[in-house]
Image 1 (cartoon, rainbow, N blue to C red):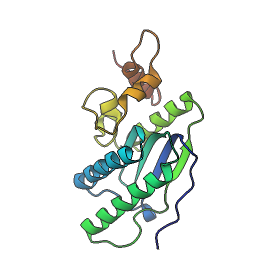
Image 2: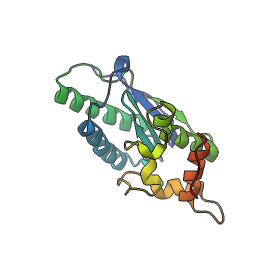
Image 3: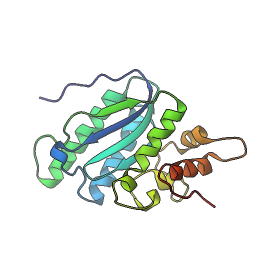
Length: 188
């Protein structure tokens, strides 16, 4: 029997995270990670999500999404369910990949939403995996900073609008904001 659908608020911006059962890896290689991003693209389109940030770690992942409708629970059920099925099939496992359906926190303001984005993309730095967020290839940071093309599902335009200020581009302000969160230097 499948897990019960978690009830989430009807629309809004959310930080969502899910981790592996008993802290097991939920990605074993680049194929798992690429499949997950392809699936995220499908889920974002199907459930009308605006994905503002993502970060794939080894034992868990982070998403920051805006959902105009009450689609968070259904989308997460699809994302985690299909990823778990593919992962188990590919690696010869059975049973639950994730310890629970998902955890989410709704942003209470634009400033709160910015902090949720920063938390997500700085995860590899805070975990000691890299010194700079742009060194981790499995997050949205490099695309949002303009270093690599953005995947279709990543709403870089809305993300940059969130950071825009008079006389300064949203992209530049995004990079500066992320850098300030970990004592990193912003762009020259």
